[in-house]
Image (tube, rainbow, N blue to C red; front, side, top):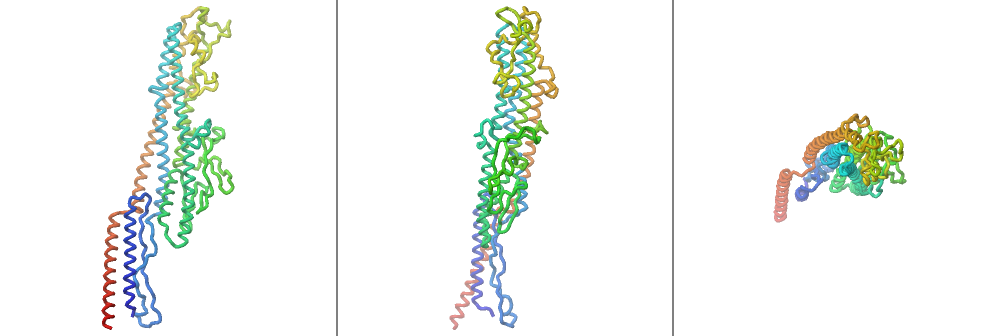
Length: 519
C-alpha cells in the first residue's frame, strides 16, 4: 500500500499549486487596466507515479499525487490579433485622411467667402467702375488695389496649401523640412519600433528555448505590433520558440532577431506622371546587410495605414484629378490663376492707355513703344510661369495707374473711352475652354464643391471604420482582457481548495502523530 507520506506530499503540492493560482489571479487583477495585458491562466495536469514490482492490483495501479502546473498561458487568439491589426491599419488610414482634409478644408474655405471668390467679384466691380470713368485716378487706383487683393488671396491660399504639404511630407525647396515632416517622423519611429522588436524577439526566443513562458515580453511585443500596424500594413508569421517574422508586401522587414530592411524618406526626383501618380516625397527601403537601396519608391506598398493617409493627402493623381489632395487643389488653382492672368493680359495688351502729358490715348501703330504692359505677372515679372503662389500685379502699373489700358478707341485724342476696361469686367461671364468650359468663378465653385463632396465621403468612411474597430476591440478584449467577475470566482474556488488542502495536511499530520504516539 502507498506510504502515508504520500498524503503529506500531495497536500503540500496542492497548497503550493493553489497558492500559485491565487498569486496569478492577484496579478491579473493588478493589471486589469494595463494596456495590452493578456489575462494569464494556469494550465494544469494530473501528476502520477507508477508503482512497479508488485502483482497486487491496488499496489501496481497508478498512484495519484495531486496536480502540477504545466505552464502559464496568455489568453490570446492569433486570429483576432491579425484581424484587429488589419482593421486598425484601415482605420488609421481614414483617420489620417480625415485629419489632413480638415486642414485642407480650412484653406479651401478661403476660396469663396472672404477669399478668392469675393476678390473676383470686387475685381470685376472695379473693372466696371473703371469703364465708366477711365480718367479718374482714384478709380484707377481702386482697380489696381482690387487686382492686388485678388493676387494676394491666390498667394495666401497657395501658401497655406504649401505649408500643409510641407508639414506632411516636407518641401524640396527646404531640404531640412523632410526629417521634421510627419512622414519623416513616422518612418523614424517605425525604425525605432522595429529595433525594439528585434530585442524582444531575441529575449523571447531565448526564454522559450529554456522552457519558460515570457508572457510579459510577448504582451509588450504584441503592443508594439499593434502600434506598427497603425502606420503600415504588416504580415506576421510565427516561428519556433515564439519568434516572429514581419513582412510588408514581398519585403521581409525582420526575421527573429535579425533586421533586414530600414525605412527612409526622400524627395521624388522622377518626372511627374511617369507612373500616373505623382508623389512629392517617397519612402525608401534600404537593405541593412549591404546598405543598398532595394526600392527607391516604395509608396505603392502602402495602400492603408497612417503613411498611406499622409501620402494620399498630398499626391497628384493623374487618373483622378478631382481627388482631394494638396497637389490636386494646387494644380487647379495654378490653372485658374494662369488662365485668368492670360485672359486679362490679352485684353490689356490689345487696348490703349492715356498718355497724360500729351493729352491723348496711346497709339501702338505709330508709337510701338507705347504698347500696354501686362497687368498680371509672376514674381520675376514674366507671364509664362504664373502660378497661384507667384501671381502678382505688375510693379510698373502699381506705380503708375495710368498704365492700365482702359480704352479701345482708334481716336488717339479720345480719353473717355473705357471699353477695354468693360471687356475685362465682362470676363466674368465668359467660358474658358481650359477650365472645363466654365467661367472663372464657376470653376472656382466647382473646386470648392468637389472638396466638400469628397470630404464628406471620407468622413463617412472614417466613422464607419471607427464603428468596426470598436466592435473588434470589444471582441478582442473579451478574450484577452481581465474580467473581474471571473477572477473573483476563480479566487474563491482556489481559496476554498487551498483551505481544503490545509485541512487535509492537518488531518494527515494528526493521524501520523497519533500513530507515532501509539508506538
